[in-house]
Image 1 (cartoon, helix red, strand yellow):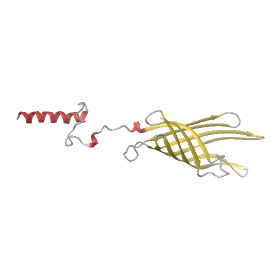
Image 2 (image 1 turned 120 degrees about the vertical axis):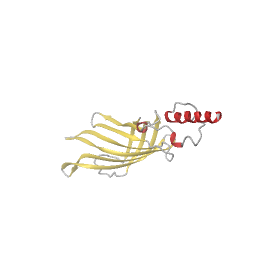
Image 3 (image 1 turned 90 degrees about the horizontal axis):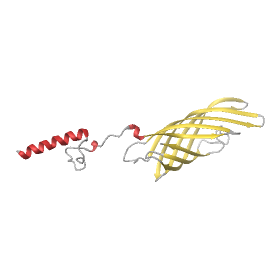
Image 4 (image 1 turned 30 degrees about the vertical axis):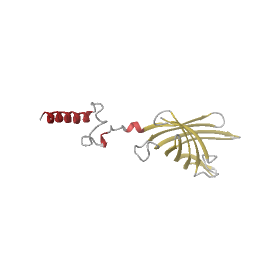
Length: 195
């Protein structure tokens, strides 16, 4: 009877410790009858969210200003092991070019979605779909149009935090043509960050 009372008292203490996690060391050597695999502490959604983007400045002729903030999410799971990140971003570009008697000035804006997957250590692959609204010359007239770009490539992530760091990437624009209204080359080199 004495042993039964001690066992009951110990069980009640273990169960109450399970609810508020104040008993230390007991979860290391727990009985599968008292605890389940779902008893791991729940991780906050915001611990898996990253913020960052790209910033670019060039003054003179031409003048280019780029602001492209982004927000990403790293899903939890055994399949990806914190290597996958997907997200969205906004883009604003200001361009001013003087060429002979021709003056070109444009405000370009839009958004993007992206996926990044770390392959080996800090090397990653990257896929992005970008949709920007820009002034485009159709013959002599200038009109605003949505310009589509699809970037595919990879790069290196210099880790600063558990979730991110500085990214250097080389991307190829799959939607590029020699008369592309925004990019003079299909290749795009970027330096950005996600923290």
